[in-house]
Amino acid sequence: MKITNDIVYVGVNDHAVDLFEGQYVVENGMSYNSYVISDEKIAVLDTVDANFKQEWLENLKRTLGDRRPDFLIVQHMEPDHSANIASFMEAYPSAQVVSSAPAFTMMKQFFGTDYAERRIVVKENDTLSLGAHTLTFFAAPMVHWPEVIVSYDSHDKVLFSADGFGKFGALDVEEDWACEARRYYIGIVGKYGAQVQNLLKKASGLDIQTICPLHGPVLKENLGYYIGLYNTWSSYAVETEGVMIAYTSVYGNTKKAVTLLADELRAKGCPKVVVADLAREDMAECVEDAFRYGKLVLASITYDAGIFPFMRTFISNLTERNYQNRTIGLIENGTWAPLAAKTMRRLLEGCKNITFTDNTVSIRSALNEENVAQIKALAEELCRDY
Picture 1 (cartoon, one colour):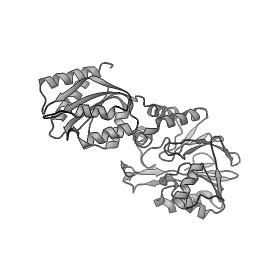
Picture 2 (cartoon, helix red, strand yellow):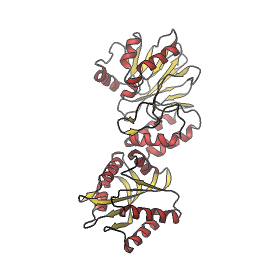
Picture 3 (cartoon, one colour):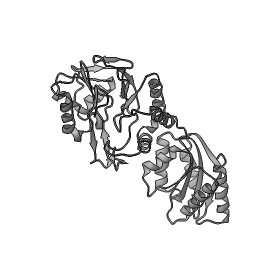
Picture 4 (tube, one colour):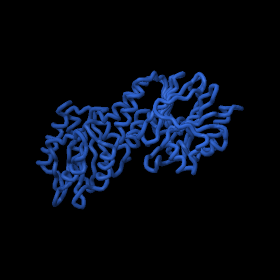
């Protein structure tokens, strides 16, 4: 796939993977992206997953013809991108590998060598001339590993963004970018919002006309839309006004409370109401929605003097990713000692800028008239700004 006159895509699609990073369901597979810049000198940017070694090397041969690459630029050492470094260096013994100092430490760990005789160590604002094309390197630590660099080609105005602006899904499948990019970002990069903000500040000073990520499609049009979403996600701002209700229920009584609350919210004109059964729905998508919407209601039964395991897992996923800047309402249910609300508050106490609603719903076994009134009051409070 030709990106510009001199830049070609040589990555691969993976439809065999079922769980990316061993946890994220990827029904439409994954892409592992690699690029070639052909100039007076030739640079290859990143490799692909180990399972696609032969396909990738063949892609390189078809693109290069009789020419041989001068440089392999390694932006990120996670194995889905770096697994074939050794294979490349063996296939092209005259090539040099270009990366950050921490990346070479990782190469020693992965491959038993740091290519001391064939390496070029780059740091912030270092450049590499290929001829007409000059690459400038920017450090992007913890986006989302410490060794990451991104590369900017000033000739074609292309940002090679490493895992930034990536998404789930292979390139031969048509699907909405934002949905799978959001799930990818929140799940994998979400903890590192401050670091992404730093990278976005660096990128703001560049004339970028194309973004080439390591996963997902090359972005060429409406770049303000993609950059705007990344700014929203990384600043933990509200993307969509509305309420997400995440619940756990064993015998259906807590679910009845959630259903009543959702109906009340819709009746009061809440712009969007999303309801998720944490025991049955994809956890990554539930976490994604919690970050997308401005308000969250957590509804859990009391379980072993705490909360139901799926709710505990859900809250853990939020706190691990620096959940913040949200309004949260609580619904608890317990037959003899409702403790879920207290437990959920405690688990969230380290989150920044969290506002708990004044109204909390406390059920003992099944809904009664008092609970219905509590739910109506909670809905009124949540809809106050709409």
